[in-house]
Length: 276
Image (cartoon, rainbow, N blue to C red; front, side):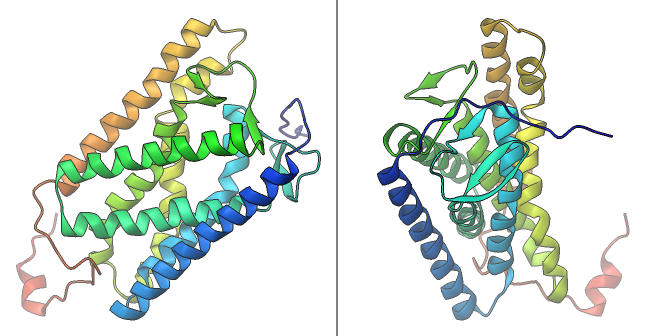
């Protein structure tokens, strides 16, 4: 019989005003993302943005694991509670945050890359989302006071381990890059494959680039110097990954219709296509 995974968090009352503001703000952002996606789906007669929006929302199921591994604690006392798993108490506004930040951002990034497929565009989008993530997290932590990061954390600014902004931004950018190249290849029901794209990119940032840091952080009594050095590998690994994907999947491509409609191929095209 296996024991459940738990997190021993030091609880505090959630700010009543902060909870109202966090819930209202987050759901407003989610509604804006939904309106944006509905508009382009209707206008361009496409469905893949709606699938990516749902993929972003589905990714919220990975939030409790992130909380457990990285030390995030949603204040439980007075929380408008959704569910608890991995020892993390999830507030009702978390799915809305994922719809807006991961689903909506993925759609926006893929369409932007279609118009301007350059490495400069990749870095511009990435740096913008890093800044957005840092500002949003500091706001929710230090101003709205609805959660915090506990245990020993490196590079903390106003309660937020600043290096984690790179992880949050990576998920949306990687999803956007892959969607930009993959959507034109998918026809009809095959577009449903996109439903796992954002959770997969989130896991790449969480476990892929973060595996060394997490291994050190969860070892027995690591020194803060070692934890801080390991945290730097998170930002470095993310930069390496985005540079690799940007150079080989984006840079130098021809601008295309941002609707990313599937290309049409004739039987002659298929006969001329070599088999790998």
